[in-house]
Image (tube, rainbow, N blue to C red; front, side, top):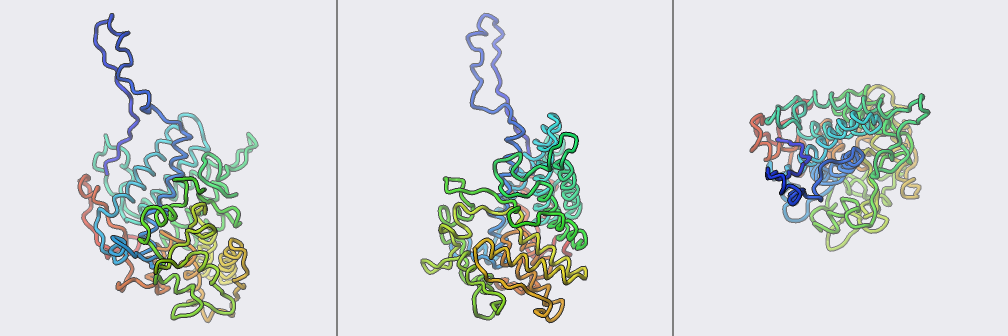
Length: 451
């Protein structure tokens, strides 16, 4: 991946004849070409681009491969059936590197020069997000030499674990740099600070802890993930969400894809997720304490022979539906899983109930009665209930990581595969341009942390 920082400077043609200089001065200077960009704008971009991972192509592919979604038309039928090649992942790679890591790193350089500690912390957190997602999706990836095209035109691939550890360390630095400042009586930086992209009452520190919990979970550090998740945001209203409106190009990205760009490509038709939410059927989880009918209607609607993403007003994928970077259910279900795995079933059940109650709060319903220890035969049934709740609550990459990490403990439909797809494929842009390319990997090649 040859990443080149491009801040362009217009040249001026020097003719040498002093008498002619005033005539041609600035002739070749384009007033519309950027010569610099503000730190605030760079940070805003690095935050905005998080949507490209949370609710765009990466989330759609991950969702199809866990059978949250179904590919129902054109190339999505093939992709749903794992018939992909490396060029299908060029866009995801660009979202992570060119539009993610690069502006985050440049923003940090500028923030340091300007002594803008809060902006520095935000950019550290966004860089950690992109690095953590890249390593989690692809395995070994360029990182220490990335975005240094002059010195390292063919950046080496760092180990998956080292990149995840580096992302976690960067999250800790971002945590410190967005902390309260008692000297100036400044509170911890709110998630709405430094950008016009996010809403919610959380702080950047709490988001950093939520991401840290996600990546420690990917590393199977259950005690560490539990501690980080417990330091993250704890209220439904605190959830850091990407703001969406009905204004053109500001809509929810699932809405844009389904309603405006590729209608019928991505649906819920026949998906395992909707089977779980049905009130009957082989995989339904409906019982006296669990009524998923309203959630199913919140997610879906039927039209044209498809069970579609509910992009209608008020639906979960509506144009103006804000979308979480890290959701409240994800945090609570990380707490639930890691508490169960470390021997605290009481905490695990409490966190599971909070994740379920979230949907009643969001939809204005009363569908989820609190569970207790008598509802589970053993630890295995509790763990499966936690992972199943996460599967029907958290769309995209985090659930993809869970299915791989647990070897599909919940038993979702893998569309003919006996084991989960293990990774995204390295993109064709890497194969064709980076001499450090580690070789073509198949979907069956586990990433190092999952071997």
